[in-house]
Image (cartoon, rainbow, N blue to C red; front, side):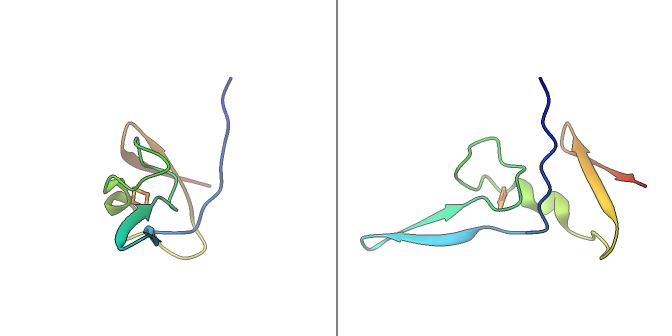
Length: 63
Ligand code: FES
């Protein structure tokens, strides 16, 4: 079963747990969800109004 998820976030959101910061993935690419693993760096250079999918960490523009 496959699922297509749309996200326009390009970075994590910080959540404070006591005095500690946790970074939650908002881009959808992390392999350690719900936490950010830095995979959002692959979103760099995305253009507004275009749609992309990511396969094995590689960006593919869809039409
Ligand atoms: S926000 Fe998704 S990996 Fe960092």
